[in-house]
Image (cartoon, rainbow, N blue to C red; front, side, top):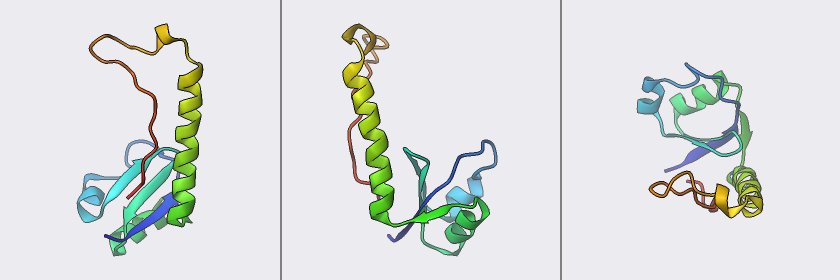
Length: 99
């Protein structure tokens, strides 16, 4: 599946709709990165939200940077604060490859 990559600030309710989610792949990633299915509806949505197009490598670098910021914050947080509960422990952010 081919994708379009962009950055755009989520503006709240109506930023994307149920119909958008049906018409094209859409995934929000750290750093205001959006992965959008590469079809006419996806391209129109990127234009509608004034998305700034990125290459996959640029988008991945933004995501990686945000995750690295989270890792630094995790590493400097005292152990006593790293668990929200015994049933739901918080975990250190992990890098991943965007689709």
